[in-house]
Image 1 (cartoon, helix red, strand yellow):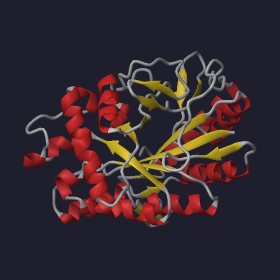
Image 2: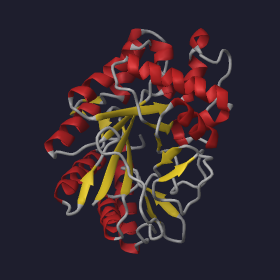
Image 3: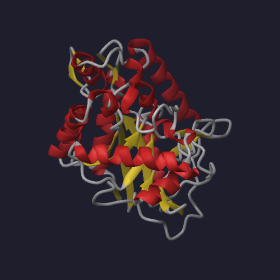
Length: 324
């Protein structure tokens, strides 16, 4: 049985902040969390309804750092509907919010784009603040973490171990030129005990011409995701992690639903509900397990047909709906 982890980074946008008042927070919530559009909501409540409809589990990695600007109530509004739906909440952290925090910055004047930009001790303080804020907003104590922008390093893993957070899922083999500096490689695809935590890599598929493409809802077609999951099952991989975001089904600036991506997410939930020897897991009830053998975990090979179909679909999506 292969466990698929549908992980949803759930976050306000620091790039859309125009002020620190309640109206600004409400506008950011509407665009980044609830995703309210003339065609109805397409944010976390919509995803929660689809997960319930198809009886699937997911993991919502919630970023509590906006509490530095808007207070804990801004995080409570995210946590409450996820808990009410019975889904899993874990810890996310975008340190860009420190630039907006003023006197609330737990590190004083120190700022950085990614958590890896800080020393081990500073990372411990930031992660402790983020964890306690998430708990104050009503979430259970988190056992798993993903860095904003995947921007973690080995000190991040050591800091998580120091705080008793057992899992990290910041290593993304499909983005080799990204912000992640965890010292694992492009061939590390299965959960591994590393610096005191279990690192759970983000899924990927092979790319034409070499390299890999990461398993994000907006980066792969439904056909590619389904093929990748079946491939993982057929080679006895223990886990396969997919990434989404709270706002991915819309264009946030236009507040318009991206019907192609919305349909992709729903069809993914539907496919998983009927896929043989595949289940969805979470970190609360069914966390990733260390594999007994990780020697045969090559990602789904690249396919010219699947790639061409996805590129054509993405061109149509970007033309009709624009970027996120």
